[in-house]
Image (cartoon, rainbow, N blue to C red; front, top):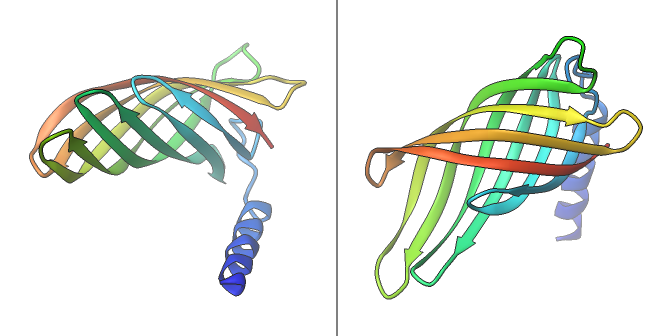
Length: 158
């Protein structure tokens, strides 16, 4: 178990340190929360020039149902002229999750997602904010379009 944990940490560190610096955004990694119809944890990391990978873990529970999911999004960043630190972005990805209706059924689902948003990194502080829209096309167990979630991301950038 210790060897597996060490290997995972070593690979993650090499992956982080060997990344190409993205030109549109002014940070390489950020971790924090995403708040919308479902609250969760968000992690962004630079992939290549002007692109990032965002992983979002969401959870929600109320008196009728509960669900949890993991979303991965490939995002392309474009700077907004005359607004240092502010970018708009678009992209696509997928979600896998599960839901359980209290006193009833539950299931695992898979969806294809889009993303459109704004991203701001404060110049003199390690704070990153984003506001985005993530619509989804559910693929399993039944097919349907969900208008999406508008979320506010607040992250520590490093």
